[in-house]
Image 1 (tube, helix red, strand yellow):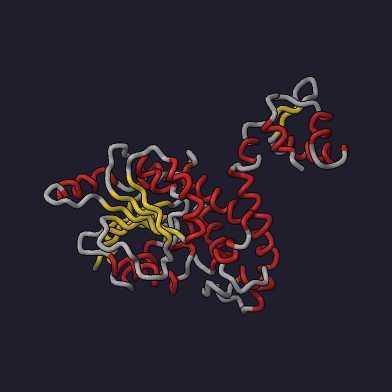
Image 2: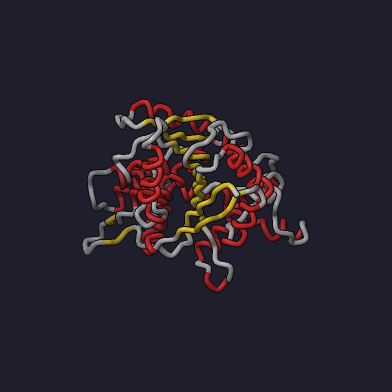
Length: 343
């Protein structure tokens, strides 16, 4: 209907109802009813003179906003699957989905494609997904991974080791999307120098290339098209990073991803995994984390893992979990950074 876009793009901060009605799709009765609902939800307030005053959240609901992207994903994909999930589970005799290519998403949306492959031919949904991931990493109420993992202290160790060599720090962000996690790292340590590799599928890399070419940051970020189900081309890096990747894949595919990283690591390499780590007991799970686990199930036939499940997964491919870093700044959600090395 374009209500949010009109209000957000207007220089005014209060509106008569007829002003909104005249600029958006829908007849006067429908628009009035929608405005009443939005006011009851706190998105608008009504002044003493009867004008509508938008809340600050409007900017997130307008085109390009964080909530707009979440709404697109929910209505176009998530809600459709949840509506038919009981029927799907009945047909599968209530087995927990574990096949990334034949799960609720494929059955209910009538496709044989994986979620990410399906996205490639649905650009509106792909754009909404990328914007949601970027906003999730950058919003103030979401902890940056550099606030959880003591990256500054760890880098001091690497700097002392590299002082006697010509080798610079090498950081590889695998499945890094449009680069939000590398940006978090570079913003956190402005003095950091090294070689930073951003890896993702070709279509995603094509999105970020123009921005990298315009960047005035002298620090090197190399965008590399890469499928993480194939051997890792960057061998012996100091850090390999997986940010919110493994929860998209059930154990079978997750093992393949991790095995390729393990094969590329040397004895000094460190693998960092930024993801939710759920408690072993259900009584300690935050509602948002429980919902995210179900979202992983319906979209990817995957799961949010506990520390015990992560430890077993890493061990199965010859990796050793040496630490699970948590921080009060992570908030109520179970964000953590897992640190692993070659076993």
